[in-house]
Length: 442
View 1 (cartoon, helix red, strand yellow):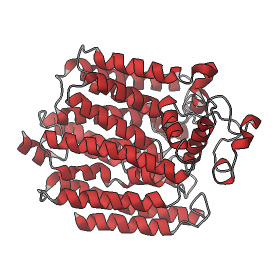
View 2 (cartoon, one colour):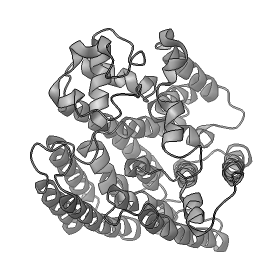
View 3 (cartoon, one colour):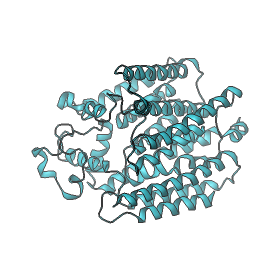
View 4 (cartoon, rainbow, N blue to C red):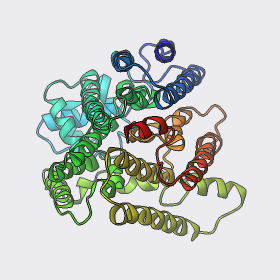
């Protein structure tokens, strides 16, 4: 296990050394492809570590080695400049705008009203600077504002994201302990190279969402439904995607969680409502820009369109089937199953999160990192694969928009079929590949 951790660290350090100083990207396409290859190699070592922590009995002291590797991995990425994504520059900018007393949804970054805030390191590296209002929802904006009042730098923002992610890791450790599972299973998230690069490397807001989701899961197990609702509302208005796991957190016919979630979201939007409908930011345009409105942004539809022309009604049909399937899964989890224990909660969160992300098939790798979190409690191979394989999406050496996503999703479909077959054969054992510890704990 320690050898695998050392290998992940070594590959990460080599990848970091390929960055050309001063470049906001890696430097050249060849270097970028080499970095992605090294990240994939560390993903293979991570797969070995996942197998070890779920199938082998490790010493109790293994947790200290696991946490040491996780900390070194994040420190190494934290002190390096972000170069696989430029999104963090928008975070810093939004924090700076709010520190100046201006609503971040009021102006695009290039608006003359904000000219006095411009600087070279941040402003010049903001994407969509000339036409897009910020897309980030109110809870994310509060985080940006808090950081911006302390330090308006990329490093300070990365530190904040890693700190919030760390809260989620601590919450997951508490869930593992209460479930009677080995604490070393935290490696399933903490050693995930995609999560580490996304949060500590590029400072994505996903780190804050991951922290809030884990804390909400902990609050549910502690029967603090009101607190769980507040945390869930904050998570949803940090990244939007966590709304998918709400049915897993809700206790049947309980009112505290949905009311607390709704009130939290209303209060957060009210804080920025002075700009009216513009509080939605770039979100309405984003769906069109990413091809979601036309259907080309969905992997399955994109593949089918390369085989034969698809009619205009096919996209609404796909969306209808996807929403119906997700709704049916949410209904079963919310209304047909008994209140879960820690492992059951991990199962339900993992299934809802993975199903939602699979149907959406995002283009950006960091959208998949949060899938590793519930796998600490219940590790399905298909979901563990989806939490790390999208590293492939960082690169496109052949300029083909279909091949690399297909290399991500086709194996995931195969693994999901195997997972479901295993559940059908052994319906009472729902955690793969963590059978050994689940059986011992129960």
